[in-house]
Length: 302
View 1 (cartoon, rainbow, N blue to C red):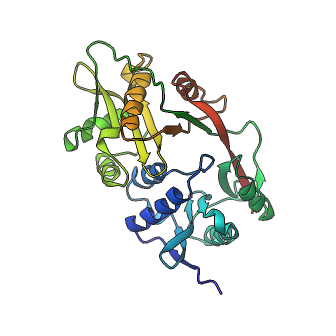
View 2 (tube, rainbow, N blue to C red; view 1 turned 90 degrees about the vertical axis):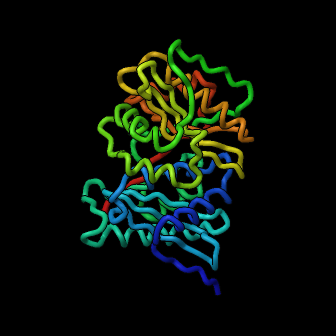
């Protein structure tokens, strides 16, 4: 008899357990990255009550987890040796979304799970549980990847400086450039300090371009997975006052070179891939990234 136990998320130590599962099961077609989990969990504050999260464990080993977010979205990951747990995660999720006062949903939107097109076994499980893929013209993300050999050198405009975040002295400026790039944004100085304390954040991979007037003009944060040798760019942005000046390309190349010096062999990024927001993917193509997969959103009406 198996002794797999499901229990609720209890805090940052459990996020590390979720990340450990992702890292242990990583392969080029794997969906989540340890860095994306940290960024998603800590970029905002005060939202934990909106995010029911459950872990499935066998002794000290985490085998699966589910993370529900409003208005009825599920992020999940299951150890490839325990694929049957995907059904249990979905059953838990459906229970959460059906209870009043938890995750809200409507008859129109139902519940949704976004996966990579290459996750065929998980897709089949979703279909068995009543999910169907969305329309072909719906927004989606690309999985883009490149190895770190033959990286071009960054070309930083005269008067601008490429460097990494130095710590507390840069928090206000780092938040300001992010909020400008992604306006409106809920990232605050408090939440960014939480990001900086999260594993596997490394300040030397939180790279910025400083303008001649001292403002931070562009940034690229890379999260390393040193076990698997792959870093994820999440997020990348340019202050609205400095767009179309080549700074995004420069800061990404600067950060990728620094990632390479950690021993990593490759990098991934997940820009929008649909016609509604094509510019970021074009940028990454110029940096040598190539499309290796895309997301598909599965929905289930009530």
